[in-house]
Each structure stands twice: as C-alpha cells, then as structure tokens.
Length: 400
Figure 1 (spheres, helix red, strand yellow):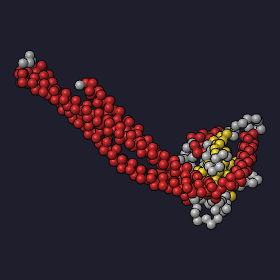
Figure 2 (cartoon, rainbow, N blue to C red; figure 1 turned 120 degrees about the vertical axis):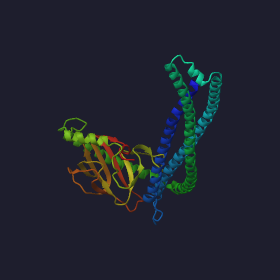
Figure 3 (spheres, rainbow, N blue to C red; figure 1 turned 90 degrees about the vertical axis):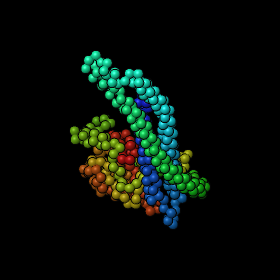
Figure 4 (spheres, rainbow, N blue to C red; figure 1 turned 90 degrees about the horizontal axis):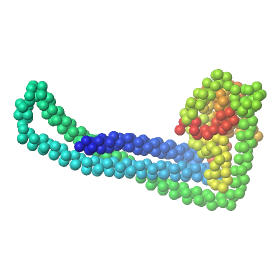
C-alpha cells in the first residue's frame, strides 16, 4: 500500500510540470505565429502593390520571395503547434489509462482492508475491545485508534477520487484545445493554397528575369560597393569621435564621463526593449552575411537591418543621447549617427534631418524622415547599432 501511494504521488507531482511546460511551449508558438501573421500583413500593405501601372519585376520578386519565406515559416510553426497538441493529448490519455489500472488495484486493496477490518470486529467487537482495556487511558487511546482508522480510510478514498477527477479535468481541457487544433489545420490548408499560388507567381517572375540575371547581379554588387563605402565612412567618423574623447590617443574605445557611462549602462540594460525607429515597419533584410533573397548565388553583407516602412515615414530616436554626426555621402542619402555613451545608433537613407550635430535628444524624438523613391516599390530605413566600432545585430536590441 505504501509503495502504491508513493507511485500515485509521483505521477500527480510530475503531471502538472509536464503539462505546464507543454502549455508554455504552445503559447510561445502561438505568439510567434501572431508575429509572423502581422509581418505578412505588413508585407502585403507596405510592399505588395498590385495597383502600380509600371512595375519593377525584380523588386516585385524580392518582395514576393520575402512574403513566401514568411509564409513557409508560419506553416512550419503551425505544424509544430499541432504536433505539440497531439503529443499532449496522447501523453495525458496514457497517464489516465495507467492511473486507472492503479486505481483498480487500489480499490481491491482497499476492499480487502475493509473486509478484514469487518471480520476482526466480528471476532471481537469494538465495545469488548474497549471494555478489555486495563485502565481509562488505554480505553481512550483504543477509541482514538478506531476514530483515526475510520478517518484515514475516508481520506484515502476521497484523495484517490479527487485526483482521478483532477486528471480527467485536465484531459477535458486538452480536448477543448483540440478544437483549436482543428482550426489551425484549416488555417494551414488556406495558407498552403495561397503559398502554392504565390510560388507559381514567383516562378513566372523568375523565368521572365532569367535572361537579365547578370544585369541584376551587377546592380546588387554595385549597391554592395556603395554600402561598403558608406560603412567605411561611418567607421571613420566613429574612430574620429573616439580619438577626440581620448584626446587623440590610440585607444579604440570611448573615454566616458560618469554621466556618459551611466547612459551607456542604461542603453545596455534596455537590450531587447528598444523602440523601433519607425512606427510601422517590417524587417526585410537581416544583419550579417547572407545570400540575396532572389539571386541566391550572390552574397550580401549588412552591418544592420533593413526595415520597410510607409512612404515619407518619420524616423524616431531609439534612445536618448547626443547627435554625433550628420553624413551626406556621395551616391547615398542622409545618414544620422546618435551617440549613447559608448553605443552608437545609425539611421541611413533619410531625406530630411530635423536635428543638428551636438544636439541632445530623448527617446522617440522625431529626428528625420525616410527617403521615398517613387520609382521603387518599397521605402526602407537601414538601421545599425555599434558598440564603439563593433557592429551589433539590431534585431537583438529592438522590441519584438
């Protein structure tokens, strides 16, 4: 009996932790699905414009490829969520079945215990057992023993029943979630149909552009060269500011005042929670070295992220600081650098700047306007973060 109750206790002790862990995972997947669905909606509204009379086929292909990649990720996440729900139900039902076998055994043991107790009382009644006591104290203890035995028996039966009902309730909850699973399956089917149509459109665009692939490769390489020259100029400006802070010594890091050091620490503590530099946008290019989304044989490198946003969108500072530099580089639009202690936030592709060098600004201050080219199908901001001269991945710093 003791071993049985230990086994029952372990089962009920572990079930909540397994269930809570799986439930948390399902919630995380659902949150990721919501983010992806929102991104697809933004891609549709910010990038996919079927009303244009003059179309840029290559740009349209980039945008469509981006949407297809997001939709494939959405379908994959949905499948993971469905599989997790199935796994939860199967696991919980298996535990219920095993527990029911244990309960049957327990009920038999319980019945034997009651029957043996009854037989014992036939041989020697409770009154005779009490009257045979040597003194009043012994009689009192024997009476308490009977009461305790009866109480323990009732608690044992009640406890087993309560736990069985608890597990059944958990299983009922999972069965309710199954209806959500059916909804996910239906949603997945719709997404797959849309994906198939988009892939057909993608293939049509690819075939129409195949003859001009070498031209597009050259355009991509030219843009990369221009971006590299701009990055070198930004690097030069940061190094120049570092030298000035160290009074022209050879140090590679900023010499900070106590106030600037506190600002840098505050900036660092906000990693993952910095506001976006635009009110509305979607990331269309990640940080680092990566294949081009369309011409896969061509590599592109970015020391920041590219955010597609609305035409002529206002640009916001992601944190309080001081304007380090306003750069107008040949072949490029305006670039703005803001210093936050030993961190620098960089905003590229601006048409207007509303601040001046050395000006102190607060988080979310409007600092400029993004450049919008009417001949292109998208408006983009290139956003970077540096720690001294080291480029960091901005995606890890802005709020998700």
